[in-house]
Length: 187
Image 1 (cartoon, rainbow, N blue to C red):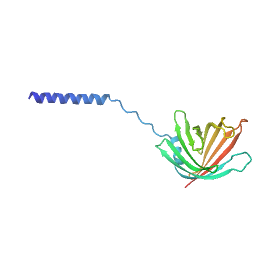
Image 2 (cartoon, one colour; image 1 turned 90 degrees about the horizontal axis):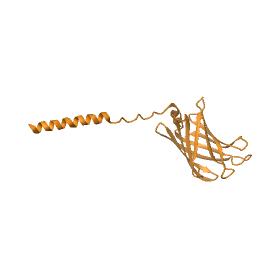
Image 3 (cartoon, helix red, strand yellow; image 1 turned 90 degrees about the vertical axis):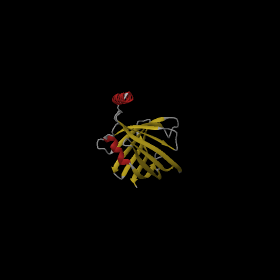
Image 4 (cartoon, one colour; image 1 turned 180 degrees about the horizontal axis):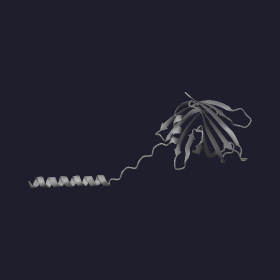
């Protein structure tokens, strides 16, 4: 009888200890939810054909090429774009990330590619109409090696199957020069 009483007492202690531990265990923090700004990114997801015009020198015709871009969602917070094509007659690949930072109240992104060692970082905003994302960056000047200049990258949503990307560089005179235009059409 004593064995049953001791066993019952021990089982009761274990149950009380388990309840205390369960009550004092910290609760996991609530995971953030994607916001409406994150939802804007989802329209970029898919397979895209890219018609590229690169303006290498002022007053000269654009160098034209084609490429493809595969854009995937990373959770509800980010999109990752893998670009493949050619540039200056050479194979070219790049990776673009784009998300929204609620703390900064800005869209943020990055770009790396197979023709340079610079890690591009971007910040910007979508216009009131929700059709144009303008990102700003500082990067290497293609005309003056070793010098950094301001860039403006504009993504305009024309329709669910067409968007236009325009990259411009700010000159010493403060004027913006278009360096690249890409027409993306959904495949």
